[in-house]
Image 1 (spheres, one colour):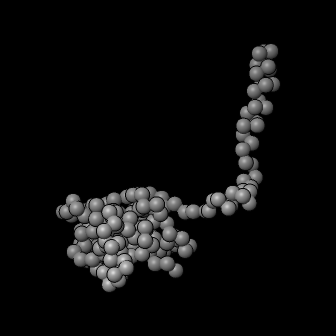
Image 2: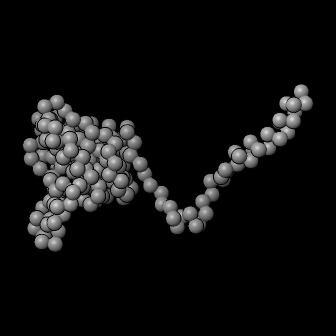
Image 3: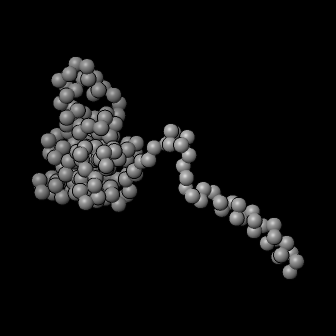
Length: 177
């Protein structure tokens, strides 16, 4: 009995101190200088975005590969329909990466890069793919990721399918509002 009492006497205060952490969740003004709030796409969001894009592709009679990346360009989801060439998986990922990296739809980027001698070398950067089908995703004016689509038969089709991926009821849009 004395042993239990002794343990509780010395151990219990240690547990309480360890639990203190940051109870009021106050953030110092110094921390706000070094940190900014951000939003992270969830897997559920990626699935819903892919479903939106897939519905548009289906309406056009196209089988496509869809890639969803987060704001850092990391893949959250890749969805490939049957009978889509294997090269489309990497193309969809790179379109999404290009779009999130440049904060621009890839069809727009491709056309402006070709028409401007100062930006035409963008096509030579290893990870960028200047083909239509990549579109950034926005939430409350912040870039949160991108969608990439490949296999739709043309850059215009891929672009249209990618732009259909927004979820308006969640405030996720493919155009900056």
